[in-house]
Image (cartoon, rainbow over all chains, first blue to last red; front, side, top):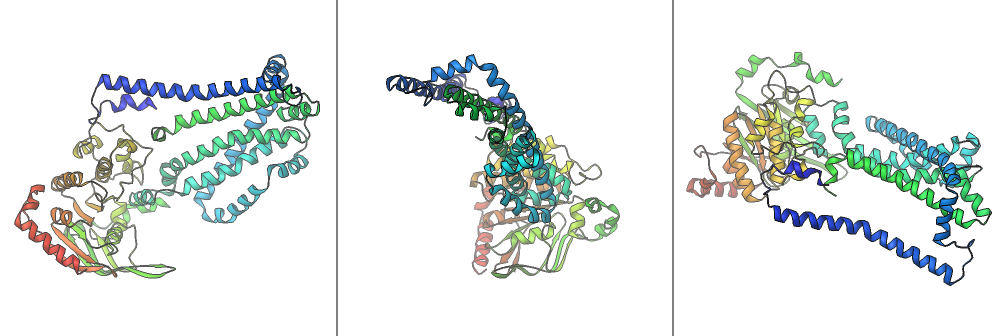
Length: 280
Length: 273
């Protein structure tokens, strides 16, 4: 990002050349707008094609509603959509926090004690291979019909990728950095805080970005199995009632939430990993 | 506990250090590594003495154990047999007193720290620099020609600049010994030449004992007061060549007949290693 420009301005290798700088910045701005506007333009074109096809081929709304019909539902039934988004959001965010905090704690324990990792890591990998759809009914049986099983499913779905990535990030440290810390007689705690933890942050954030969208999926899948409210429940109801415009509107709301969640994590990443940003 | 390493009770008496003029003493040091493919003898019965304030360059073909030798005296690798003494005591004691500075092949900077934070890292960990030996990081960055780059991150620097940061970091706690493991191996020749001259200037100003591993004959001859030639498989001492070049040395000196004949002697010995 452009954050480093004022810092580097005083450094020997850089020469002030306003003209060249202007041209460079203008080209950079153009590229940025291109990257933003092109996908939006493509989306608009796709929606227009969809709308025209629905009208031209006379497709009935319950099979595939036109974008305009979906938009109308988004506006007219906004309150119902929001009432159902709230529990899903609470479940996804709580599950995200619980699952990731647990994963970070356990990865830290693994980093300190090899025996723990050797004993439990293979089990973690095995549990991770059970599909969510198979785990969900078991958790509903265990935890009942409230929000708890949904939070648990979202947490479990977040837990494993973060555990695997964080463990790898804490372990895969440049050996020379570890030898340096040894020459400096650093304690295990100092090695953890000053080297391993920092080294794991890029790994952690890539896991958190995956978890941000999968936590929402976990909550929705949880709601499919016995729930009266939430995005998942609304999807099931709309499907059974052949209310396709509502179904599509629900999916849009779910996706927007998921994308926002992802965006928040990406923003946090760019704030935390300042040393990593300029490289990409 | 990690704190035990900083127990100054276990320190060798200072008087002893004063008596011995040797900075590094190796007696019959051997190092063997065992893997699935068998046992490798990296070092075989090395005897070596480096006096205080000396500059020894270690030269040899790859696999001759020159890096291993450096790692033994820096207490990174333990010798399988024989004894290594640093400043009259165990290498581990010298390490925990912060008498050792180590410069790694690839600089080993922490990418999430700025230049200044990398240089001051040794003051933050392992109890910091003992008793007022911490040097001013800004002066050190000035010394290695990086004044003004304090806030830059390692990825913003060139390879040569990164290596200079790591030299400044190694010097921050005023070590009595500086061990350098092919520090300029990855640099272009012009940068390497300049850093060689700068390193000699630092050595003359600080009086630090330096052990410097290289695979460049020119670098070994230009920097060293002595050149230790090692032979490979197993790693052993081939010859210790004294270098009698006037001081201060400048890169242009490499065209003098003395330097040329020294280099050709080193090359001849190296070919038999």
